[in-house]
Length: 562
Image 1 (cartoon, one colour):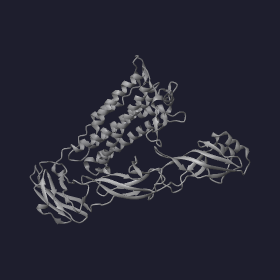
Image 2: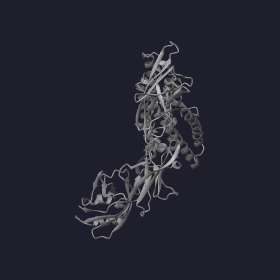
Image 3: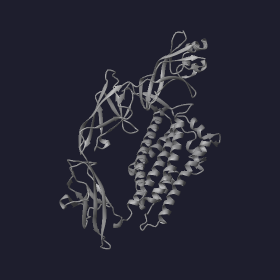
């Protein structure tokens, strides 16, 4: 993973420099859009690095009690903290630049292939000005507080990482272990120096000197600065991943003697059924095809295995036994091997667990919030099949769709056809190498409970039948609030409504505030204290991330002028 990402990053970085140079000639929309694509590609490579690093962090953490991992496990937290702090700081800068109170480069796009689908995209083609970032980092010939903080974090990051690497090396040298681990961090330190290279003054192409921050960010088009910031984020995750990879390589390549071996259980299936032959293999911690034990003494739940119930091949002791009853079985005993140096027989203990369950005939499907699927919402659902890996599971339905959620699990999306009242779910999964279909049951389709209307003024909400000042009613926002205890995660956005003030004719308003219709405001101002105002026919969107239900219902309500 690291090698692949490294090569890909080098290609991206080279193309990035070429396009930065092109900006000096002519900034066309195509160039800006291409820089945006490169920025997105860099962000994709960051996701790959983060995924690889998480696996490495988990491996180090899960082995923290092992002496070989102990020092690294104590110190890698420093690497994660300083990396996350700098990375998140840059992300906050990017978010502020792309979407602020003054301007926003985000736009909603209707997907033509799905008229009900709206996605939010960054409009790179209009990011040709430098003013927003210049104001963020610079004030006259000086730096803003955020500019000074960025410079401080940029220069401090390689220092902090180098300091942690030195501490790991020093602690390893002073440890009392018989066999030291040779941590080689030279290439990482070189990368830190190259990727986070800093000098107070930088020589420009005209031969003049420019301060580091000005040289890299002042006067550049917004997309160029965003891409540079993303490149720094990529460098942070690259360094973090390389540190973890180097630590694991150093630990795993450490010269092992026989006393450091341990037994492992290697299985060909994630779980065994009562109809299966158990073909699990007991192997040594250092897998060696030439390994042959001098003695094998194994037991399942205390009962000794016969010689016909296991065999020795390719450095493994492979079981060959059927267990007809479901349950948890303890595999214990010893494997004996002669020490190559002392010729003494050394016994390695075996202490493993084998789980045997009955073969399933149905899938397990549950709606996380309630035992129904609500129309117009992504209903979070947990779907599993005993003995089947999660990655191979594929749900489907006759009256709806299933989508994979970024947070994990599946989202059940019922059909928009109001005549359909149920969703029959089918789930397929790979079981012992073959894809099979399982019945997931039938679920009711219900309309989501309507939102509760109110008028929001600053942080206050004027709820049904409450008194409200005229100016608050004119300028406040008509809102919809999810019913209490309805635990679905979505936001209600009012798009239009009708307002009737006293005996005045009803007025239609687009948007979520009465001030969008001058006649409605005039009605409000012309009426006296105690006049009843009815808000009705409220149209709203229910937004769940990039998923939008444009037909969400918000209840009518009344307020009283004060």
